Amino acid sequence: MPKLSDTQAVILSAAAQREDRNVLPLPGSLRGGAAAKVVGALLSRGLIAEMTTNSETKADTALNRIWRNDEDGRAILLRITDAGLAVIGIEPEGDSAPVGADEAPSAEAPEDAPTETKAAPKARTPREGTKQAQLIAMLRAPEGATIAEIVAATDWLPHTVRGAFAGALKKKLGLEVTSEKVEGRGRVYRLDAEAGL
Image (cartoon, rainbow, N blue to C red; front, side, top):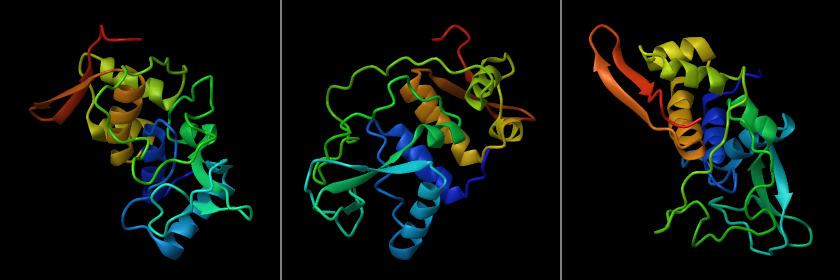
């Protein structure tokens, strides 16, 4: 598995949690040359890809939703690829085309903005032998797992583990992670043994 910098892991985790898989917006502190360098590294490794849309919405300097425009003025988005999902331990869906792939997102109303009526998460099944499957097994064990134990077992960073709890497990698989303080171990996380999958 290729090593990711903290910034790259945060960018990929955020994109994986968005329904349209858009990499933008980038973290608030990442702009200009630093943004171009990080995005260039992710593009060259095939973890994200440019996607041209039919929209002629102009890219904005704040890089909220559109990366750039091509020579014909069409908006180009950045989307996480299946390889990008795999590197952070998320199993890609069978239909890998992201929602709204042929449309540019609106800067006024981002596609990942909360709406009043939200559909239940689409149930997915993790592939056997992946870090995501390992994470689920650790959380389903009667003793649960701490962030430090998960980091040691998966070689993920702590924020990637927390992102997997909120994104892959809760949003994508519909599983609820609970936690409690345990004397001598600290905060221990668990999944209900009867829940989902």
